[in-house]
Length: 345
Image (cartoon, rainbow, N blue to C red; front, side, top):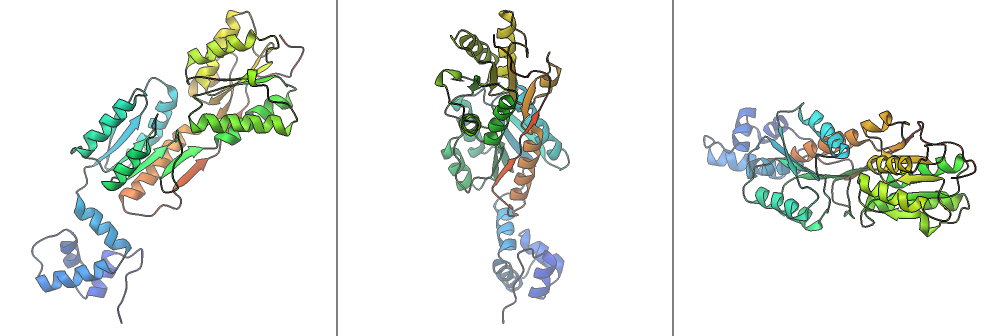
């Protein structure tokens, strides 16, 4: 009767089943020449029958560790990316690995250039991907070349087999809108990021759900979109204020947009929150020191970086993930930029 190694088998268990010493198993695993051919064949057979150990061994023999983890981010000129990088660096710093950071500046061309470098001999043990474009072809290519990766804060649709970590964007959009409704607001505007992005879609869907649940009709004139930049917040706030029936509150797609809204309101002599309530999304460090301090939906960016890196380290070690998709909870941080509704602008 054949003996089998459990999924969590060790070198010691392989040695016991094969009837050899632990150093002999180690030499076989590391492809050392000083093992008798018959012994090598026997040990390899045990390894082959062991499932989980077999996969780890094949990965180890395929390539040696480079000692490098790659991270791809859209840019370092925004607090969103920096917070995720901080989380990744915190976990990597507790290992013997080094973090190699590449910036794409939100361009498809630079994303593709990074992938080409990796495939043409750029040594890496695995990658953390914060993509602007999130092309499925990247994932397929990395799979084909057996390069472990984890996507953080996905921008598009991901298949069920793509390891990823994100936040509850729909819940965050609903929570922000419900807070404004609880303060008596009914003319609530929303400024999203690019409509093609999943996070924008989910936050908008949460906004719509909160209005629908409260019996408040959705006014298309109050739904605006743009980039996750300060200029979008400024321009769209100006357009909203100019409406014949302007909103009494604005929910923005991120805190940087909210800063643009602040500037637009002040330029027109309007006061926050007396004349307009404002809610952001992300809770970057600057949100709490704005004047007035910004009420915002906290997206746990550092924790997303930590969790994504922990997932990647398990994949590099050949260990299975508990789940390929992790969503961390968003929470509302109530500060000073929202007030009970009164008679409007």
